[in-house]
Amino acid sequence: MQTDSSFTFVLFGGTGDLSMRKILPALYEAHRAGMLEASGKIIAVARHEEDRGGYLQWVNEHVKTHVSRNGVDENAWSSFVDRIEYVKLDLGKAEDFVKLRDAMQDLPGTRVFYLATGPSLFVPICRALASVGLNENARIVLEKPLGYDLRSSNAINDAVGEIFAEGQIYRIDHYLGKEPVQNLLALRFGNALFEPLWRREWVESIQITIAEELGVEARGDFYDNTGALRDMVQNHLLQLLSIVAMEPPHSMDSDSVRDEKLRVLRALKPIDPRDISKVAVRGQYHAGVIRGTSVPAYATEPGVKTDSATETFVALKVEIENWRWAGVPFFLRTGKRLADRVAEIVVNFRAVPHSALGSSALRPGANRLVIRLQPNETIRLYCLAKKPGEGMNLSSVHLDLAFDQFFKEGQMEAYQRLLLDVIHGRLALFVRRDEQEAAWKWVEPILNEWAASGKPKPYAAGTWGPAAASAMLAQHDTCWLEEEN
Ligand code: BG6
Image (cartoon, rainbow, N blue to C red; front, side):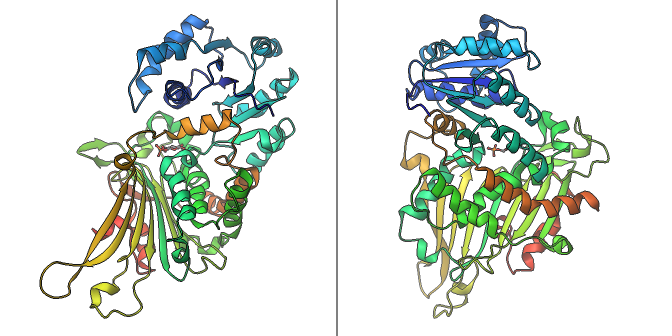
C-alpha cells in the first residue's frame, strides 16, 4: 500500500443520489477544511453521455445545496471542482475501463474506488478493474447493502476477495463515522470512571434506538425488498451494540477494535425460531400525522406492493452470552415514520440495593446515561439529588455534555471522516468480513421466520410503533425512555 498522501478518488455512481447528497459534499468539506492533499483528484464515473463541463454543471446544480454545516465558500468551491474529472463508462465495455486506466495513468498516490452503486454491480466492477490492472495499490469502498442475506453477502465477499485483499476493502457503515459514536469509545476507554460500572453487576438494561420521521422517500422499490431488519438492524444497530458492549481493545488499531466487536457479535444469544414472537416485534406504518402533517400508509408509497409484508419497524430483545453481560437485556429499536427523529443509547443502571433515603431512590432509571447521537449530540448522566427545602425528597437531575457547546468547531460529518479514513488507509471504522458474517448469521433466523409466516403489526405514522414493542419491555419491568415522561 502506498503511503503518499496524494490520491485519486474514483466515484462509481457519480451521478447517483448518494454521490449528490453525501459523498461529494463530504469531499468538498474535507477540501474546504484543507484536509485533502492539494494534488488529489476526483474522477466521477457514470453511464451518462456527458463531458466534464456538463458534469460540473450537474455538480453545481445538485451538490452545492447539500453542502451543510458551513454553507458554501465560493473560493473553496471553485478550487474543489477543479479537482473533478468525468469519465463516461459503460460496464459492459472493456475499452471504457482502459480509458479509465489511461485517465489515471500519471496520477500519483493512493487509488480509491468508491462503489456508490447497487450491490449487483460490485463484482462486475471489481472484475473489470482487475482486467486492466487497476486493483493494484488500490482501496475499494463498498456501500451497504452488501447482499441480501448471509449467502448473497458471502458470494459478493468471495468474488471481491479474489481481486482485493481484505486490507484493501472498506465496507462502509456510516453510523461508525458519527462523532458521538467516536465519543462513546472515548467515554468508555478514556475514562476509568465508567469501566467498573459497565457490566451486569451495575447495569440493568440497555436500549439502543434509531427512530426516523422520514418514510421510504423515493426508495420504495428498494426498501420493499429490504425491510428494516436488513436496512438498519443487521448493520447500524448491531454495530452500535458491539461498540457499547465490547471489551477494552488493546489499542485503537483497526484489528484490535474489530476483533473486540467481533467477539460481541459472536456472543449474541442465538435466536430460537420458537421464541421469535417473544423477542422480536415487527411493524408497518399506516397513515398518520407527523408534526401536524398527514402522511400516507407505507403500502401506498410509490414502488411498494399494496399487500406488502415488509417491516418498517423492528424492536428486539438481545442477550450477550459472556461474563460481562449475561442476563442484561439489550433492547434495540428502529423504525420509519415514528414520532421523532432520534438516535440514542440509554444505559439504565441498577437502583441502590437499600435506600435509607426513601423509596424514590429505589426507582429504576435513577442513574442513567443517555448518549444521544442525533439530533443535538449530547451525553447526559442522570442522578438523584435532594430537592431544595424541607425534608429529604429526591428528584432526578442531569449533567450534560453538549458537544457543540463545548467544542465550538471541528465537528465532522460521518461521511467526511470515513472518506478521509479511506484516503489515509485507516480501517478501524470499516466493517470486516467476519463481523458482517456474524451479524448476518445472527439475524437470519428472524429473517427466515418472518418470511415464512405472519405479517407486521400495524402502527400509525407519528407514533412510537406497535404496542407490542412496549409490552416486550414491560415483561422486564421497564419501558422505552420516552414512555417515562
Ligand atoms: C441508511 C438507511 O443506511 O441510514 C436509511 O438505508 C436510513 O433507510 C439512514 O434512513 C439513516 O441514517 P441517518 O444518518 O440519517 O440516521
